[in-house]
Image (cartoon, rainbow, N blue to C red; front, side):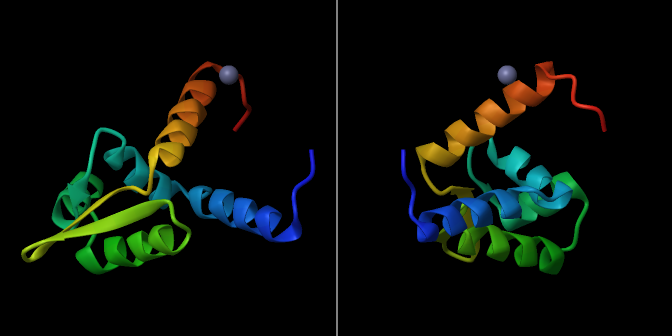
Amino acid sequence: MSINNIDIEKCCLFFKVLGDPTRFKIIDTLSDGEKCVSEICAALDMSPSAVSHQLNTLKKAKVVKPRRDGKNIYYSFDDEHVTEVIKVALEHSSHSNIEI
Ligand SMILES: [Zn+2]
């Protein structure tokens, strides 16, 4: 198997962006479907500006995508690959004996 340097950098950025507890909590709230910014704020007890900042980072790395509906912006996973990666990561974490 070969992978070019651009793809390696994209993969590393993808996991780097996932590798943050606050961003992963946001991702967890999206795992049962799209949420608007205020729903994410309420779930994490965070300010809209802090949540928007993290969503922007997730969006730039193509982890999430926005959908505007009137005044609200809803966020969901970018596509089914993200859904699958998160599902597998959560399953693996729940049964693994990783020392933290
Ligand atoms: Zn496993």
